Length: 302
Ligand SMILES: [Zn+2]
Ligand SMILES: [Zn+2]
Image 1 (cartoon, rainbow, N blue to C red):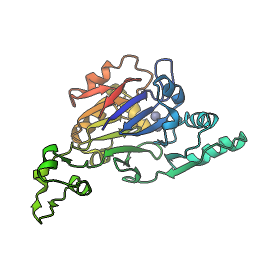
Image 2 (image 1 turned 90 degrees about the vertical axis):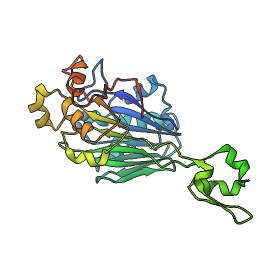
Image 3 (image 1 turned 120 degrees about the vertical axis):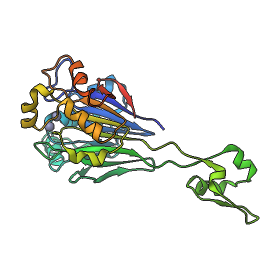
């Protein structure tokens, strides 16, 4: 199953010519999820050839503008293009009111139903289907803010081709075998599951943590994820500013990645003051070597 993250925006605060505000698309199997929706996100979706009407679930971490000012514009475009499918928005209290005020005062009646799901606590289950589930991660910011943990579910076992013939496994028995059951044949003989199947791939997971100060409370929620996106708005030289604004440095992000034993770290949400991003790697890698910069337009495999 494909599982990848496309970075649309890696900047904080102001959108500039060289960086967009926070947004990314997560593709898991047949599902597409949009996480955060800074100004200009719909243009980046087009630039990266993401079909916007295929987005049915949008997750907003918090109500600072650099994470959602693109949402009403994107929703309006979906409406103008005649969308009929429901659109689910997951975000903090107040976001539904902001959206409704905008459309109500414009006299717009959306062509589709928006269904708002309030995000309010850590570990909250926001979405699941048979392949994946999405829950919240508690972050530490100036206003309520949650990250998102996207986890593949435990996959089904695979029946060996030769086992199908050898044990004459009928079609109706296959589903329970892939779920781990033994098989009892017509003669009453029990065939142990391990003789018929091979282990499935390990389920993978991705964690999105932006915006946040250094917060060890995150660690238990993201323990062992394959890929972590953690904000690093500043470098250590701006430690005082990071503290005051409840943001992290590259070293902070690396410390969280290390303690949580993640597979790989991507750094993002950079302050505009830094033109060259190599300093972020120089700061993070001595603490956590498997670190990369989140580049806009680049896909990262989970
Ligand atoms: Zn931000
Ligand atoms: Zn913020």
